[in-house]
Length: 193
Length: 193
Image 1 (cartoon, each protein chain N blue to C red):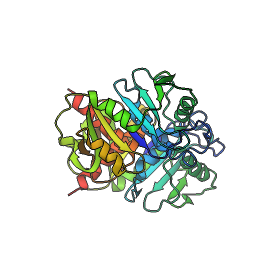
Image 2 (cartoon, rainbow over the protein chains, first blue to last red; image 1 turned 180 degrees about the horizontal axis):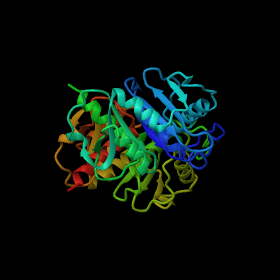
Image 3 (tube, chains in turn orange, cyan; image 1 turned 90 degrees about the vertical axis):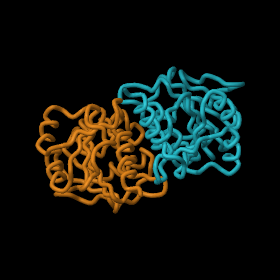
Image 4 (tube, each protein chain N blue to C red; image 1 turned 30 degrees about the horizontal axis):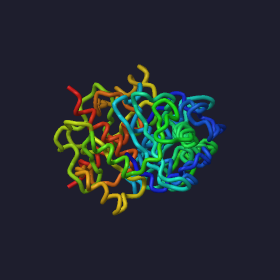
């Protein structure tokens, strides 16, 4: 799950200025690429939630489901087109915008409470426990990240209700999409014979 | 070093179709982002070479120098603009196109022979030795990757003259830019106290 603190909730954005006028939606687009793309296919065992909290209609939550995804290419522009299409969908409850892409008005507290029912929550922080040394995951794992801004104290407070484990990937502060690459690699390695 | 087997060597490409009409230059752009970007700055100890081998004027080599880089943003489009600007430079020998971005007509054999003088060459392959278990690097390290295509037998043959160590990041085949993220993380961790 990635929190887009000011990511646009309007479909009225230009594909030619993704990093300028979208509340840094570009960061979330790269998170989708790093969540799902392998050289020869899509990770079918991954789900990623983007929580868009910017104007004009927050919150909007996009849920990407690897086992259903189609039309996802690795470049930012085409992923932005998928997101824009989803944001233009009229929705009550959760609506399927395209194969594997769902949109709803769920808020961050709604989504984290749903995810915590069936997965262990991990909070990625530089000062957490070294992820490489953490015990193997015995259930599904949800990783919570901010965009280019850390979680606010209020968001951390909500997260703390779900017994998150603080996990670190190293001492350097990395872009959210790069964190996802490293998490996927760590999980891959744990599944290798 | 990333080999762009058919990446355009013309500045006449549109920023609106980076994954379509550029010979997959988009892959190389993402490699630049993953080579250099930290959350709060640029990796000043990294250099990345992109070897563009597509029409109409191959080869062109772009050398990005972290300690000098300016104007590098993490989105594909703005990185593409830097590359396009460099490709439009007239050059004899190696020319500085913008701060930290150099362009030349060096070929892959030229570049690998230069790099091998001062660094150990690593070839990233799924069936190589686990990078996590490799001994610490006692000199600069150069990692060689293909774009969405593996190195050709001829390119591998050239590489083999420089005693490359085959290094693996895991069994799954990953995008080149994701490989760079993982390599940077491994090197970061080795430098941590």
